[in-house]
Length: 438
Ligand code: MEV
Image (cartoon, rainbow, N blue to C red; front, side, top):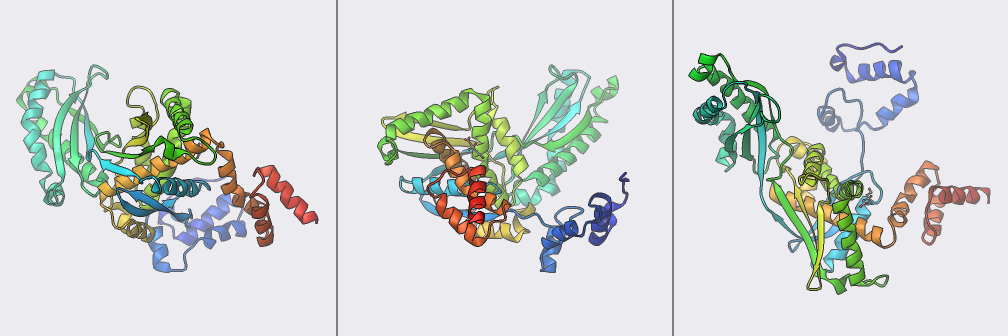
């Protein structure tokens, strides 16, 4: 039976691999070799990656691709995308090309406010906590002067502090809601540092507040942390064109637009569809979030909470026809950065920013929202016309061929054959089997 290990993080990389091999890989040299195959020959580059997290043994590759032809507010972009899903980049590129010929994407940042809370218990008199909060507020602000200095000099920093009484929902629960402008930084470290300092000052000052002293009841901080729910950090992206312009040789523009809107309405009504619909949006958003070294878990959590803001979970995109004009749009809460975190550390992330022509955070928000809208357009267009599997399986063909260890020649033949034949796992297996018998 495997034994627990102590001091693992202190071991060298070689010792860690040795321990892993002994305990979980039956000392299989092939398994160890897999880890080593992904080491980078460039020692300083490898060290940089080793240092991102603890206990690094190897690197985990994901493809880094670009989707060209994104016309956003009149400027052309090639979007760097990191994803494992075969059809995502192809779908994004198709949608970009489609809308390039119809005026491109328009995007606009609506707001950029981030927030965090100091959560605390208070079981005393409501009036006392309100009075204390008003008294302590300037001291809280003062206590973060040194943390805020640089951010303030650039035009950001703490915006507002307010007291929120939630004791009617959870006995004794209050919080201080703090709002921030963090400019081009995602701001997690800045916000958390400010909150933790203010929480300490809050508790310290409470000890000297007479009304608390008299009753022997003091507020007690439970925790201080930013919120990844950022409905005041919103971006809007849209496309529009005359319904006739949606016509292709396969379908009529108006009929297509109406079916497309119906699909959006279904995603607004039915949670089971909405989750998949929004997952498709996040295929595009996350790929750019990852390529630019941003925190995809934070973005995901915030976006899905936003999708549920009206007490039910619904579509993040909307569509309408008005005066024969089809409009399709998305509204997304996105707290992302172009400075700080991995953004200036990971060489591919730095390159992604070069490719995007060095955007600031607001521009990046627009680009990500457009990536989500484009991805959703591509998915819903396929769903209401050909179905999703045709395009998806075409892109997945190479993965199946690789699973079957197809040779270069077999791959070429298969690519040719499946141009006109529906791809499925079994049809590819049959094709390879029969070509090997010949
Ligand atoms: C697959 O990754 C994403 C889709 O399921 C999205 C959708 O259904 O809208 C195709």
